[in-house]
Length: 427
View 1 (cartoon, helix red, strand yellow):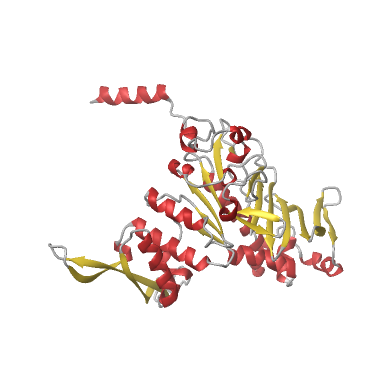
View 2 (tube, rainbow, N blue to C red):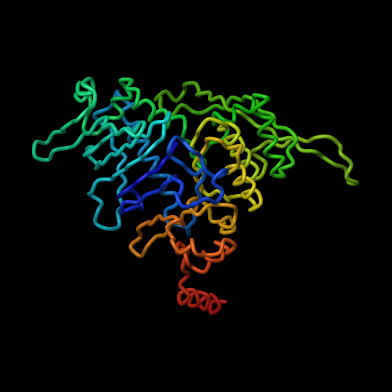
């Protein structure tokens, strides 16, 4: 599970920025339902990130994707010399040549792993992995670039790891090399990135997504339909069927060659139909490509939530309220924070201010603001110490709209009135 994540000099995050799922020690509110206890560590089940358009909410998710790409760079062994590091520094303020820095802490199989890496466009400059187990901290390895010798120094807990340093190029992470050579600790971290992390956003092509294929399984499908009915989507049944899609082979120089056949899943949604008097006539079928954006998004999210049950996944949902009514958002939030959710994490971005007044703890609410230098600043509602002295019935949403927490768009009234005046003149 994700414990916390630090990023510096990546995308819109110039200064070191911390995002944490660690529960606040002073908060007792909703402790039994909204948090998970793993050994001595207590984590929140969900976190909700609010902020204006362009503030950097999505960039936080993108930064984690950048780290994942960096670690999986080594997989392409055929062209390892030509591998480009996924270097995306902050470009609006004098640090575009400085290294990007990441630190991620994960709780895996009862052990806390802390992984840190710094790199620039050419090489990895610093890397370390520590493991805390039963309050004992072990430095598994440390790798650092020495500018004087133009080479790396290594400290490793295992002698066999020293032998693997010769397989580690400047543009690859040592953790990636350890994973390729079946190191148990590295394998756990890669397993998390590969199978325990899911990003749900508009970029997914739903028809060939592995989760959609699970709708062919009856028990899985019935759980998905149950969620859809609770959310008032009126879908009676879902039919999944395999279809072949032909795609022109653009890689080959032989333009007369055969097309590539890609197998996808086509989905039919079944609704009740009625006559003019409201008498049920049976069911009618609508292909999902003809249904609403909200229905398709809900179908995808329902598949994600059913599949994740008891698997300990960390699910990132960007633009949570896109195409959803606020009542559906509230229901989904209730599922995320319910006793039914025993081990999954949900990290969500949203513009829907009303969600601030849902049953949430202050350590579950985050804001992103972009300052006048175009730098993203991330902070938690838990950081506002004066909240402890406020009545619990005061609306967070109203206080947010008043600007008490920042992270709100500021409309330039002068330019706005000037623009509207010009529109009237042109009429």
